[in-house]
Image (tube, rainbow, N blue to C red; front, side, top):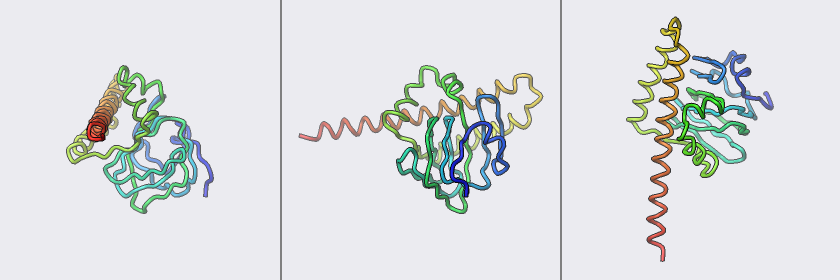
Length: 194
């Protein structure tokens, strides 16, 4: 069993158990991870958005217990240590890993939503409803087509990055709705308390 793994662009690209759908200097899109059981501790050096497509995984993220189930998204900021990883036998995922530079480029003035969720409120799991699942399923199909069929396009990287920016913005919108809902619940409870 491996004791510690550094999750970087290099380790993702060199791991034969990971199916890479796309990569450039700022982005890695992972289609599937075939074997996850050898990782005991991992330092995630990039921002990650992980969608659980099947099964579940439990782990500690910087000491905080987390569980990710099917149709949930884990948002992992860079420089996080993941320990005590336990997965179900049927676990699988889709993921994208982003440098800070590209994440800031994608989010621009909306970066404050990401920072609020990741660093202030420390909410790292978003549950998707059926409509959101449908959106991301169709989105992923379009992304896969752009990756596989558009390689000859001279603007291939720009097309891929535009699609990924759309996905990150949609996720930020879901995070903002979660924040707004929590703030509304908090203000209601504040008004009820004597």
